[in-house]
Image (cartoon, rainbow, N blue to C red; front, side, top):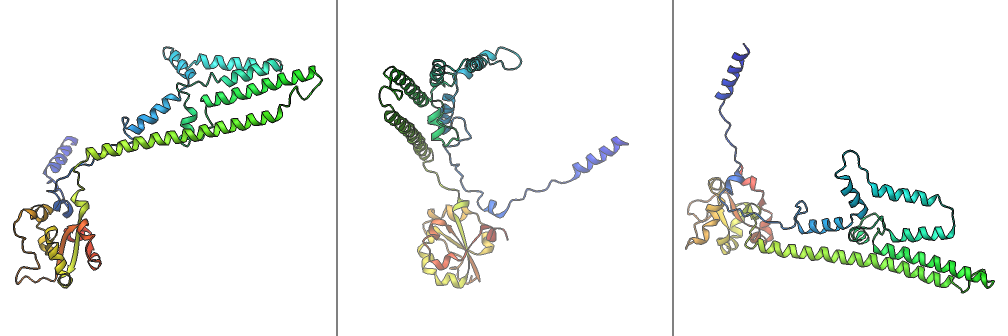
Length: 328
């Protein structure tokens, strides 16, 4: 029974005629027009795009050496990630913070922190990249941060030595007045960081702009001879015969770049039959308004955006959507 029912259903489906493909009037009207695709050189969705390669390079330069080494060591080891280098560094840091709070130990820790060895990246480009691209992070772990921290460490060591020598000569405030010089160094550090960030922003934007210019030039070269599709350039005007007569001189002056037809005639024509071969004809064809005894109440003018842009303002109010004249 089930097999019989399935056979009947299959026969009914086979007997059902296929629905014809519906082609709207706009598609029919432009079906014979040549279509040349526009090539976009810049596309961030493509991996080989110049901007994508640029920022991928910046991102790769931000990879920290410690993470890369841990990844290489973890690849052949099955199971969870071990990360031996990172764990060893964390263990050393925990052990350091358990040492007595002596000044020598504190300054040694500051020096190690100033070197930023665990944060060492392939290109030390963190500061440049994060600042220039509007990142929410701080100055990063680039070379400028190491310089900044090393200056701080040097200030502290010189201050300790100055204070120690001051105690020898009974000057608790230090052997020499160090405060003003200390403030000057802090100001220089602030200026260094601000200058580096500003320069990073300028350099990265200039590099980005240079890539954009190169892409624009390449896009112009590969699209030489490109013309926008006729669907996007064609304009339709629908007007009473009286309006046409009032501006007939303008239409005659531009008759090589427009066609005047009756609404019913337009349903039988295409853009190619109306405008593509018009320039090849030695004599202009009679328009619907010029045929003797063919006075009609309404006309449709087919032209381009460039032509209508120079038309009298009164005519522009008669521009209608393509569907109004191509899909009655």
